[in-house]
Amino acid sequence: MAKVLQILKNKEGDAIFYIFIIVFVILTLSAIIIEYFRMDSLYQQVEYELQRGANSSVEYAMLDEYRRDGVAKMDSTMAEEELYNYLHQSMKLDREFCKYSDGKPVYRLEIQSVTAIESPPRLTIKGQIKTRSTFSFLTGDIRLPFAISSSNNRID
Image 1 (cartoon, rainbow, N blue to C red):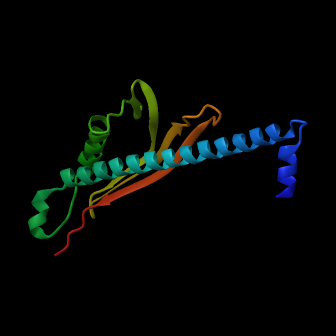
Image 2: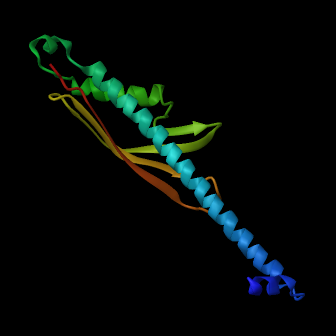
């Protein structure tokens, strides 16, 4: 503590240099923490919307004529089509699966695979959310992987 007081009392101007370094470090850490929580919030939002889309697609594509026999079956083609309709209509994604806000790109979904299984009914989506930082000094693309799965199990 005595060393710090000695530096602050020094008339050579060393104290202002150390204060600038401390302020720079604090601002940089604050920006990184803010960006981390923004990415976490974006990931949770997109994951929630994708889960809703997968759930509604599976429910929509269920074949009701098999239910009375106690069999759960799904039209896999219809489930995939309904998922893509959900992505474009409800999530407001364009043809390249990009989301825009006020004309600026927010994120892009890079879907690697969509797997639909008829019996037992299951729809699985795997891919990445690609986005950029809001701070100019954090360059490059940020990719957040996701794997969403929805199934409809018959419980008697």
